[in-house]
Length: 158
Image (cartoon, rainbow, N blue to C red; front, side, top):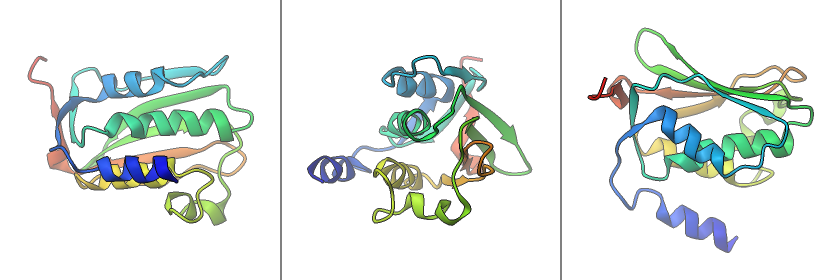
């Protein structure tokens, strides 16, 4: 509870800034012991997102949750999809998935197995990013982060 309070107090303290998306996934996932689970980062290397400095914790939490709660996970994959407005960043695994009755509850403080997804939702909301779970139970979890159009750009270095 003390750790949660400390982390929650850090959200929004520093101003958001442009950060390399692929690098954020790499740094967030690097702190998770994935064992034999393959981690595929298929995000473009030339895309930046405008996000809170704590954004790498979101990617850490997604990988950590897959490892700890995914059961039969052998692969975790990050990729992006472009639609008419926002860009979707997807984290999916091939584990047991999340039951339909928990898809919304996992993002709430009171119902989460741990509070990582609650904190992740709060971190993302600072810059208008939403997170949903769109996987099929029994076929893996699929977290979709929807970035507003003004929340991503091609890197100036590209």
